[in-house]
Image 1 (spheres, rainbow, N blue to C red):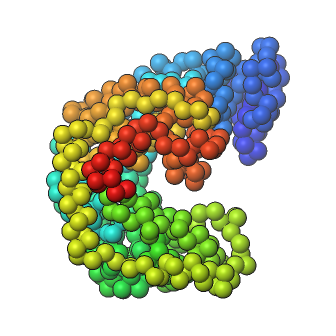
Image 2 (image 1 turned 180 degrees about the horizontal axis):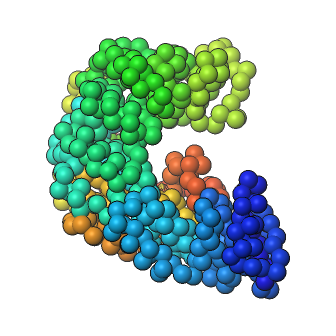
Image 3 (image 1 turned 90 degrees about the horizontal axis):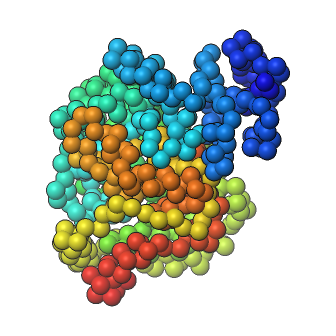
Length: 515
Ligand code: SF4
């Protein structure tokens, strides 16, 4: 039998030896991804894919390629026959029973490969990246965040009892992200919960406002964290404290320096939401990152909110200003050895001058920077009207439909990643929490919710080659952040779906037609 191998250059010899020994083929051929198709593999071919390259097979599920030919996955000296996944489920169970978490996770990841290759709408694998909200309580009221108007009403923390319900998923994940809507480090359970996650062999990642840091946290950050992203939306005390209401710039700086001193090797990212109020401080924020030992600064464009009414703050209104300061931030990063992430980096005009942005800057600076207390009061009243409406008329969605936008593969959040809030509610992703898969009420129930009708339907749409309506305008698609998915971004991608249009109409009525 002819055996075709798809692998990296480094693994060629190792995989060839394993194939010759275990499968005894007549001959072996290496192919690139474009030469793996039903036509190209016609005859009696058998395919071997290196585990790390499985995501490259996106889009090949459509013609059922992997059901029509024998396929093996190669991982760490073993060849896994994808037609024998039931044996792997049994092996995973035995490994979990014997508490061999690392091996159980490895087998789970191969099961995930098989789910992907076969385009399963019911996943047998558990997610490897588990975003589990520690709390939706926050000690800040940032001017671009819903805490600005919700003021922690109804907020709570993830209880140890709820965590027990999610144990079967936690023991098979690799990375736990502590975030949801709140500040994870202020939860009184956070240290105990980190210890539980780590006890199952997980690494921890988080975004924090770094307003709270004690010795117990420092010890865990140094020992258990893969990376830490710190939200810093101003390089000066005035900007920072006006954006991150209730937080202290001096405390932030004290904690950033303390962290640098105690855990200098931890990969730290400074995360900044860019808006008109702080755009001119972009290069200074790179310098601040350098001073406190962070190796990366990520500038995220503001997603404006109808409820906050901050559409004027978005830099889509001042593209030249954004371009100029993005270039300055990149230059500062190059000078200081800090990696700077800005949108559209390869297409920026590196020669843009200050004169070219003067008009936009003038227009931008003419607008009042911060809301007055009267404006804040109106915002909160409107938000309350919307909240009362949504309490009576749920906006939650339990299905979605296909759009005309073509895609290949599936979003990572339907395959390897999962977002669960502190109540055990599993959503399609953290961006799409109104698309609710269900609630985990007891241990052993996670997979049922993970494979709810919503999740099955959404996976079916992805694997059929079309983007679900719920995923239009997704920033993760635009940013190319998804490993298992590629999308043909056409103008249809930027259209609002029916759910969004309906939501906007409701808001319009609640706002008295003022949006
Ligand atoms: S494509 Fe975007 S919106 Fe859709 S599930 Fe993935 S992350 Fe969420």
